[in-house]
Every structure is written in C-alpha cells, then in structure tokens.
Length: 153
Ligand code: HEC
Image (cartoon, rainbow, N blue to C red; front, top):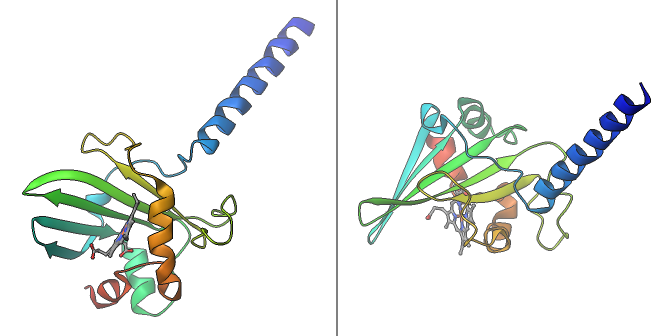
C-alpha cells in the first residue's frame, strides 16, 4: 500500500511539473482544430500578403450587439505570402488568462500564439511582439478587425 501511494505521489509531482513547464513556455494557446468551420469574417490583402480571418458564431454575435467577446473566443488568421500558406496567428481569450503578464504588456485576458503551416508552434515568433502591437487596440478589445466582425453576416 505504502509503495503504491509513493508511486502515486511521485506521479502527481511529475504531472505537476509537466503542467508548470508547459505554462512557463507560454503554450496556453493550442492549434485551433476545425477553426475553418467557424465564421470566415474577413479577408485582408496587402501586396503579396493575403490574410483570412476566422472566429466563432458566438464571437460574431457578441461583436454585432456590442458585447465583450465571450470567454473561450478563438480568432485564427491564416497568413498567405505569394499564394502560399506562410503561418497561422491565433488569439484566444479565457476568463482568468493574462495575469502572468506585466500590466504594460497584458492584453486583457487574451493569449497569443503563432503556428507553422504544419500546425506546430512557431518559436521564431516572439509573443511579446504580438502583445506590444495589439496593446495599441486596448479600446477595441485588443483587436484590429473588430469592425469587420461587427459587419459580418
Ligand atoms: C506590428 C503590429 C502587429 C504585430 C507584431 C502582430 N499583429 Fe496581429 N494584427 C495586426 C494587424 C494590423 C491586424 C489586422 C489584419 C491586418 O491588417 O493585417 C492583426 C490581426 C490579428 C488577428 C486577427 C484579430 C484582430 O486583432 O484583428 C490575430 C488573431 C492576430 N493578429 C494575432 C497575432 C499574433 C499571434 C501575433 C504574434 C505572433 C501578432 N498578431 C503580431 C498587427 C500586428
């Protein structure tokens, strides 16, 4: 019995360490499987760049009625360069998120992540840069395309 409980607590400690390591690494945002079954609410084109933006029906409804986007909202942007998928950038908002960042960086309850075309995390992108730029949109829930969401069908 004692041996089993030692194994159990060792396992609990190990699992706890894994959870902490993942958090410390900044990987709260997972690749949003099935994002393209949500609402495709905008396309942005600029030079050789084409971006396709997706979010949930719930987020679009909230934006249209002027309510804050709900906890659990995920926004996915496909970033195509010269006709080829270059990366994905994702924002996800959850109640209680964001507290790990200093106030000058924190974007409310949003967390950010970039992914390669094969959907693995893109470690070349520093999430601090995402947050610094999106921070300028604090008056619009840290979003650049809130107006496009409001106008979406
Ligand atoms: C230099 C400023 C800048 C940086 C850095 C930046 N973004 Fe953005 N982001 C924008 C702009 C501007 C848009 C609106 C689309 C457009 O015009 O390209 C946008 C749009 C988005 C959107 C769609 C929702 C919205 O805000 O409209 C997501 C999701 C997103 N960015 C995630 C990220 C992630 C993740 C990173 C970091 C890997 C990042 N962004 C870095 C400027 C930035």
